[in-house]
Length: 458
Image (cartoon, rainbow, N blue to C red; front, side, top):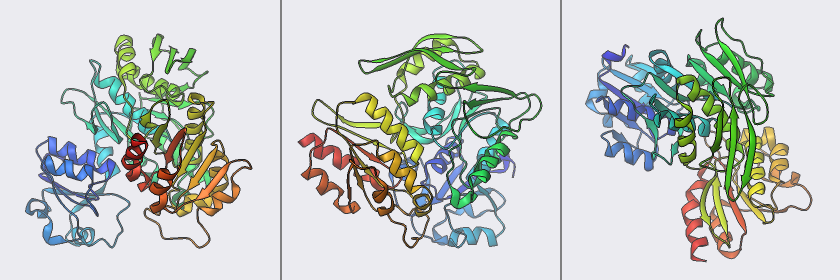
């Protein structure tokens, strides 16, 4: 279906962070948008306020009339939706054109110049930072992000004048193989999603395949030290980046008084005295990658310097809720051992003399099974670890796989306890904390506001 033929778009799983961004794109284009999701959330409520027709039951009779014309309606679904979903079955049996979310993004990377950020971790912050740098410059951009940016309160940016689109390239279900980037960053390739890939080698090969999709005349910016070897088409320029080495890297890093500043060394143009708007050390790496993409797209040095200082971060990424002399509380989306390690190292750097307590909700039975020792090693960087039950997401329980696997591997000397999710709030009420962080990609985030209220009242 050509873009000009699309009169309506129906989303199955419209409340997902990535799906909702595409839905908003079509809404802004004046196209009818309808959709299903299992439960209401802030994103679905916002979409409804903007004109989307959304319902929360698998019910074909609630599909808007404009979405029942297969000649003009595109159906988009997320891989998390099972093949037995009644509405998906209906659209398939009726012969509608049905695409995964990634296929729609792939179409946009062919119509515009795609600036894509891939990697096991760091991609949401890096892509959001890239979008902010460009949106604040004369270049501007469109953007489809995996998180809500604090600068704009959304995961979507629309620019009718820009030829660039910033996209978070998701490796889950090999979704990023639908993209044809003009330029791409790869932040990391630590093995993940082994329920999909089966082995670390297959995971790395998937990233290698992704690099082969970069357009001739385009760019790949690869973090120093990654195991995967790119497979680039002729005419693609390869750059490296890192904190202390690479074609793009930092010099003269200054950390102190709640600020992080550095000078950038770049093959395009060096930039002095860059200040991070979110001063955590991992954002040095993220910032270097974002600046590389911004420079490729034509953003100027002064524009970049100003925008880096004003970047406010992304919801659930090192997100401070309470910060006073008595208590610090923040939440973070980290759900992979490498992400947790980096979060806790950054936290320790900021609060080296404080007791750090982690409440961690493991995400997926398969990930816990595959990496429980690595989870324990990373979590052991904290002084105290509280483990809740595993958040299953799309999975059924696996016999013998519980949070106790991680609990039993935690280092000697680390305070530890197991806690049911429903007991988290009473536990917070009964204890005092120097620095508390809730970690995980599940619904532990739903408690963030209540934890904040408890700690502020105290």
